[in-house]
Amino acid sequence: MKNWSIKKKVWIAIFCMLLTIIVGAIFLTLFLYDELYVEKQIELLVTEGEHLAEFHRRGEEAFFERLDWSKQTIASNVLFSDDPMQLGSGIPFEPYSNENMITFEERQLLLEGETVVMVRPHPHFGQDILGVAVPLFQNDHLSGAVLLSMPLSEVYEPFLQIRVVLIFSLIVVILVIILISKKVINDVVQPLSDMKQISTLMAEGDFSKRIHANRSDELGQLAHSFNSLSTSLEKVEDKRREFLANVSHELRTPLSYMKGYAEAMEEGVIEQKKGLAIIQKESNRLERLVNDLLDLAQLEGDSYPIQREPIAFAQLISEVIESFELIVTQKDIRLVQNMDEESIIYGDRDRLEQVIRNLLDNAIRYTPANKQISIALTTDHGWSELIIADEGIGIPEKDLKAVKERFYRVNKARTRNSGGTGLGLAIVSQIINKHDGVFELYSKVGQGTSAKIRIKTI
Ligand SMILES: Nc1ncnc2c1ncn2[C@@H]1O[C@H](COP(=O)(O)OP(=O)(O)OP(=O)(O)O)[C@@H](O)[C@H]1O
Ligand SMILES: [Mg+2]
View 1 (spheres, rainbow, N blue to C red):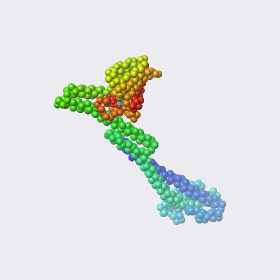
View 2 (spheres, helix red, strand yellow):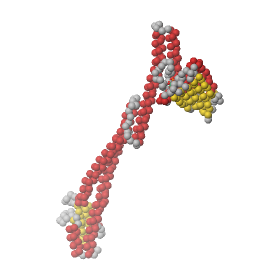
View 3 (cartoon, rainbow, N blue to C red):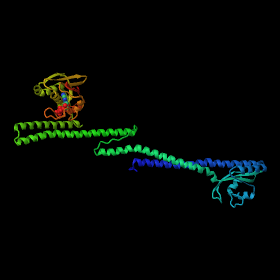
View 4 (cartoon, rainbow, N blue to C red):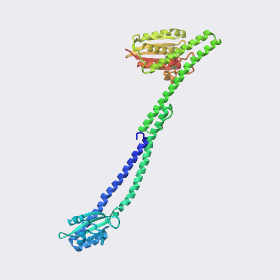
């Protein structure tokens, strides 16, 4: 039973319900018929019998007149007996019959003045007889009895007609219940079996299928949630594939450069000095890439420990700026600094240095000569805010959100000199997240970019 499908279980429940309805309806009808109709017939016979007894008390003439009237008008056999022999031995079913209708005990009841009701099989006609015997008294002595009887088949005849109607309506009701059940079961079970099928596909790595359920009930909501789950899993899977493709591409390019130059040097096609410089440059690039990837992997995992300590933020920034001085001078870029020396934050020194390094690296890389980069550090309401604003090429609005993703670069052409790997801002984002801070980018193409980070002060 545990392994039965929902469909099977529901059908069995419906079948049991139908069976209960049928059995219940049959019993109820029989009971009501017996209680109401047959009782009514008995009551009718008893009333008529008592009327006859009443007339008997008034006198013989009135009694026989009423007896004739009864015989003609009511739909039952009316038998009068004043024969003590007959009474003594029990009234026969009909004249000259050998079989008695009244048993000894019933005769005793009659003698005591009681009306007797009986249902008895008829000896000749193979059917049941419903009979009522009413005692007739004269001077306190039982002088006779009237027996009103009718075959039970007559009583049940109207019931036969009712039975046809009843069976027909039962069949209609059952058909309607089956049809409605089928529709409801399909309605409920179909989306569930769809979900089962699609989740099997999902387990195999196919996230493309969706459930079509145009409804707003609980199942519709479930299907909707299921579809959202598929969509997000599909996105995660796409991202994973894209990430792997990016990583392998980024690793393959410098490796194939290095291999190519090593071979060219061996064959004497290029000068050894030039070749070695290129190989060194590529291996540096490779090293940086692997380190960045490692950092990201660590930062994205929950286990990465942030070693917090109080940091004089302005001082840390100045140290990083110093390391960029040479390149800034070479590129002829003006650096304007305006920093609140009092700003003390609580964070991981190495990681925050990495943040400033990445942001400054971007600002310098994407800013042409003779332009300005301003670095401002302010403290406000318990927050330390660093803004690195350049006058560089800017980031198009459509790319502004995406540049924080891994490997995302506005200029997709992987130019060896100008382009990094697209991991810098992803690392910044992760580190600031770990510090419960805020990292925002504002940019206008052709005008410049501002990177803003906010970290709580001590
Ligand atoms: N200050 C900026 N001005 C213009 N474009 C920027 C700026 N900072 C970032 N970008 C754009 O955002 C992209 C992503 O920046 P990110 O720092 O993540 O990667 P990257 O600089 O290309 O490489 P990496 O930092 O890993 O060496 C860059 O490729 C660039 O297109
Ligand atoms: Mg960068």
